[in-house]
Structure formats: structure tokens, C-alpha cells
Length: 359
Image (cartoon, rainbow, N blue to C red):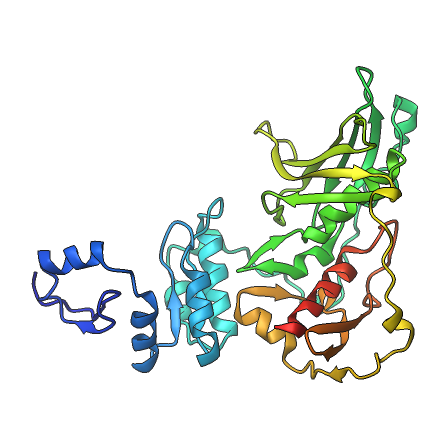
């Protein structure tokens, strides 16, 4: 080993090495002893390093970096990401650094060789009001081709299968039709909230005469991009002897022949399967004896951990705590309409934010 020009922060010792000590004995310790990522990170922070860029084909250390540095003002971004390996992803992460106050040498970024990646500016600044005419997607009467119409904004058709008691619901999801979903992201990736999948399952239950989503397991995040809408398939199985039906939710990119990706699986049941709950203490608001929690900076804490909630998902307006119990008052922003959702995903997601009040 020779002296290095770049400081080496060891996850074995937590100290800075000049490189000369990285011999066979060191790497043997590296294999046998626990990886002390925290020691190296704390030493980096102590030395004044607060901006971390993970250079890899897909970020895997962003979460521990964020958790370990958020309280000390750390800024964490990736470089590339799975299925997002182009210049656009690099520009996105440079933009994240820029908006968080880190200086970017834009002359280097936007210099020679990158012109093909950037569109020309319009000849007239449209400011904040667009003047382009939008072409609405034509509406078709799916009943004319033997399908039913489920009551859900993301689902467009339903069919009872001929070989049993199963049902199939299909739909289409895009940021063009549901732009508010872009305000729910993790580390720059737009994810359909799990509450949206739960509401799809609830619609599936109502479609077959059930009342309850008895169980729903989320298997894989449902990722949305501006470029590619998704097709949805919801499969409902035959009723078993206990009045339950299996349900699964799949998606596939529009105009793609790739395999369908499964995002959730669960069970639907009648109302008798789960007794209703009563919360007598909510008869009076605020709940007597509860202590109000200040919400200033509440969503900044989520952002520091890489979870980005826009105004559509900041529906928690009051938070109260009584010991280990938290109470929240949530409202759907004026910009959103309940439409045909069972429970609007943004509203239910905001209700789950109440859980932060007991941490």
C-alpha cells in the first residue's frame, strides 16, 4: 500500500488513513470485525464534510447516510438509479444539491457535449399560465364491449371471469391524469402511496359485494414516471368457504410486453369478519387531557430522511398526544377532490403521519 492523495475514512477504525496502513492485516480485520459505518460517518461530519454523493449504479447507502447525518444538517443524494441510468438522473441529483444550497459549477455541467440533453427555451416566457390546448383522452363506453365500470378514478373496466367466480379489474395510472401523485416521493422517485393500493383493494371488495380489506401485504413499490403511464390489473379470486376472497394488484408500463409486476396481495371479507371500532374519546375535540404538538418543521423531518411530501400530502393540520396515544386532525387540501375514492389516498396517508406523534 502507498500513500493516497484522497483521505481514506476507515469503517474499521473510524479514523482517517493516509493509505499506507491498508495492508493484508487491515483487510483481514475488515473481514472479521463489524463494519462501523457510523464511526467513519461521524469522523467525516466532525471534519466538516456535510454533503454526500453516492456514486453507484443504484443508491444503497443513502438511507443510513441520511439517518446518520440529518441531525447535523447532512445533504445526501445519489448519482444513478435502477432503471434511471441516464444524464437526466444525474441532472436531477445535481438539481437536488443546488436547491439545498450546495454550489454547483453549472458552466461545467452545461458546457460542451451536453447540449443534446437540453431542450431549447421557448421564444416567449409563459410565466405560470400555460396557453397550450390540452387534448382530452376520449371516453369510451366499456359496457358496449361487455365490461362493467368500477367506481374508482384509477380503474376503468371490470369483468367477471367465465371459468369461475373470479373477477378482473383494469385501469390506467399516469402523472398526467393524477399530477398530485408527483408530490409523494422517496429519494426523488415518485411512489404511489400504499394507501392508494389499499383504496384499490377496497374498491375491489365493494365490487364483489364484500365490505372489508381484511389483509393487504405490499410487496413492491409502485413507481410512477412522467414519461410512462402504467396499466393496472386487480385480480379477485373465488370466494372460499369462510366468505373470503384473495386479491392481487399488478402493473405494467403502457405499450410494454414485459412481465407484469406484483405490488400487493391480500384478502377481502364481509363486514362480520372485522368488528367495528368505537373511539368514545373522540366525541370531544381536542381530546380532553391531550397535549398539542407543534407541527412547525414536522414535514422537514420527513424530508431529511429522503421522504418528500408535497402540499397534497401535508394534510395533518393538528396533532395531539396523550401519553403513548396520538390524535390527529387531517383535511384534504382544497386542490384535491374526493372523487370516487373510498378514502382519498392523500387523506389516509396524512392520517398515518399521526403515528410520528408517539415516537
